[in-house]
Image 1 (cartoon, helix red, strand yellow):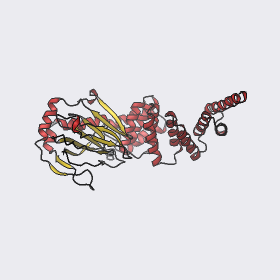
Image 2 (cartoon, rainbow, N blue to C red):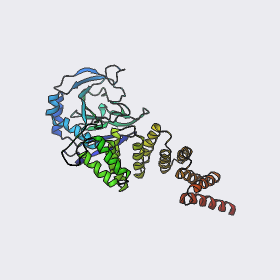
Image 3 (cartoon, rainbow, N blue to C red):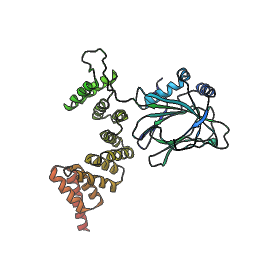
Image 4 (cartoon, rainbow, N blue to C red):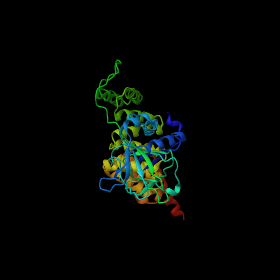
Length: 394
């Protein structure tokens, strides 16, 4: 089944992806699965977190049912396609059964730095808005950012690291709220040897990484991207391969494609600050400034003294109209790297925009000493001079 033909909504909670779809399953499937789930054995043992009381009932989906009912495989396929992460590994497949009076608590299904995926299927064939039961997704600060109604046949896929809470029906609801939860793990980086029998195919991940790295070192990104694509096709997985393809796509002006490839690399190495920065730059070029700001901030938390990231953060903040914060970010970049002419001239440009003649002249002169042909520095000085002439004339 090609889920690209379905109507899928993509959201971000913080910088983590969420996908929602209401058109994946027809009415026949919804009623068939609802009848199937009623045959399972439910026990009141489910806890939102280990430090809480029992939240509600649950039932594991037996292996023979998981294999015989197509919906469960479609849930996994939906996650693999929307997150562009093939080969997801099943961790747990079960059904939550919730009634009025139960209590669910905010929790995460995986560590904050992990990229594993949770897929929810709302299994009730009928649901009223009066019955409540919304799934709530929170930002890392605990602020609710998204509420999802348990609409019949709806599927919701999100990073398990997102703080979330299952919904409980209101007292006007006399139905059990049934939700299938499929927890899937992102495969680890392949380190073993492989050989597809083709001449010239690297036999180990080390050989493969070496070949792609050599092409990158030679600044031959078309070759690096082609090699990476071939290696991924034969089952060799490494974040560098996704990154090489992303850089090539970026250079060709395909920022959406590059962003998706960077996300696949990030799934394998979630704390790679360089990937976060690269994704932030793509988002900035796509005018998705708030998302870019979030990723640059995340990269800075990992590597606080990387001057370019502070500069990129300043650019995104400026594009978002947050000039004071942008000036501070550029100033921090210039402090970390006194020869970062672009950061210095950005401080000058913002100062000139604000009418701060002293700072604008000082920073523009400083930038021109590093780069005499810097057009932005000359423009900042020209703006200050123009304002000075106007002031004298008035």
